[in-house]
Image (cartoon, rainbow, N blue to C red; front, side):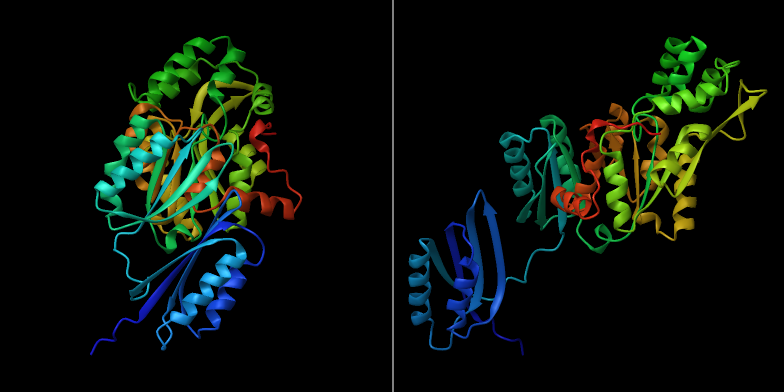
Length: 409
């Protein structure tokens, strides 16, 4: 025999926020001996919306309602009372987090996205702000739609609107320790290391043209790498030190790594660039794993050759799997971040693939596309708010403002 749903009373209080409002309402409810079934509170620019769902007292609740209305009047707030049955535990299956990121985030974009969610038959249960600057990030808690179907539904709309959007299944994995595997050139750092080296060889334009063709997937990466490296023959080894000194991290890179390491995340970099640079970068940032190509150096000069196998598109995906095994992390708990065609297999192999300021073909293939120039935006997709980042940094005296792109060295 099923248990009957209890009679309930939903109390919604709105008005100017001040200390003690919640305590006053709950003290009033306590006089009726009711059970609290659910509570939600939101504050926007000192305006409070407080909803409390309680059981109706045995005597029917008339006296309690009078006391609630009197308390609201004394607080100078408006109150709405609604009777019903049942608690607030029954929500549709298919729960997702839909994260919207814009710089700025226009009402037009939010209107269109929320309309598409409604048309899919889903419901928005809760809305939470993750960041207010340098981007606006809003997290929608959605139920009633399969996350994969919802992602497909919203992908074209977000591209049309020019906003970044991520759909992720709600669950423990979003909060668990994960491994983040990043590309380096034009992802973790600004620009391409090989082009910086090419400037020392006097062939920057030629190398940049080949790099662009490879990033677009028009030519085989391994072939393009050998072609570009051959042009570096004779460049002094000291050029690598100069290039490293000139590197600029992506804005927010240090914040992202620092924040997620506090939560137990592990990090890896996998690059089609060169270990002589990436190994130093990994040591600087506290990256756990690194893999890249090794330049051959003889008598203090580059020979124009690569030692060993090329870290190409398939090799990046293999590295992700190997690093996940070494870290004791399931492949489904990995996150890959990249921008070029060489990253596509890695993005596909990860539990979550993120195209970061990527080429069009990569944006179309990836589950999530981030197109703002702040790498720490990734933390908002993982349920971490800007306020939490700043509070953690303030607690240990760390400067949160690494959006000025410090040097890598």
